[in-house]
Length: 310
Image 1: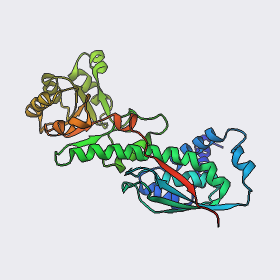
Image 2 (image 1 turned 90 degrees about the vertical axis):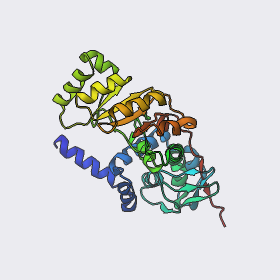
Image 3 (image 1 turned 45 degrees about the vertical axis):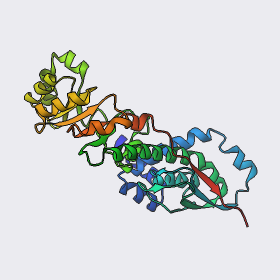
Image 4 (image 1 turned 30 degrees about the vertical axis):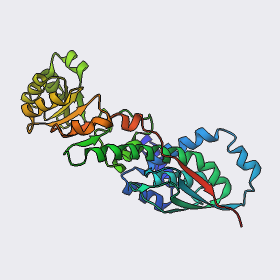
């Protein structure tokens, strides 16, 4: 069997681990069901090891079924419900029924029931922590992002994420940013070229580095990092239409906007805090990129509670 054929068969097998409803929900969210299944499968394998869920196997009859609820333990913004659903699909071989009671991007308050699940008790408890780890993490990112988006409302600036993500979870964390009202910048090193300090130094300057990228990858968008007004002007005159303004004060950002505004999209980054974000958003820049959205967001506390048995 050829490698492409093997890869397609493997992808089909992974997709089959999800119910059609789960796969459809992931697709609507812009998440690849196969990629999510891979993440979920690896996360479950990390938790189960070779022996599996020894506690549930020892204490719960294989035939027992129960109903459980996913419940918010704090106020915040929900993200990742379909990902949690995928965990229960994989852990139960699609035998758990999952009913959404909320939707991603919505504000939830402590005590809200987010979903109701029914199925084999062992599978419910085996999947519990993995599902919550992903759901709490994603909802935490969405909650944090919403705070930044709300703080920028009316300024004309948009909050962006960065590549400072948890290895292996980038697609989930960047989805959570979208659910929270932010915008994704680039998914990796491949879809947007970013000319930074070391590239400029190695190439011999801003213009030289920019032209080399454009020449080598003419169809890839290029962003150039600048730290002074002079560098911003040089980059724009070289043809750059997207600038990253690194560690500039609001006053310096206004100078750059006056010098090159309208000729390039402008993104401010570095040293940004939620307490002062509006001051930066009102300088006239188009974007503010915040690595903390994905590297420092606290989780949103969510729990799984079995309903009492009659």
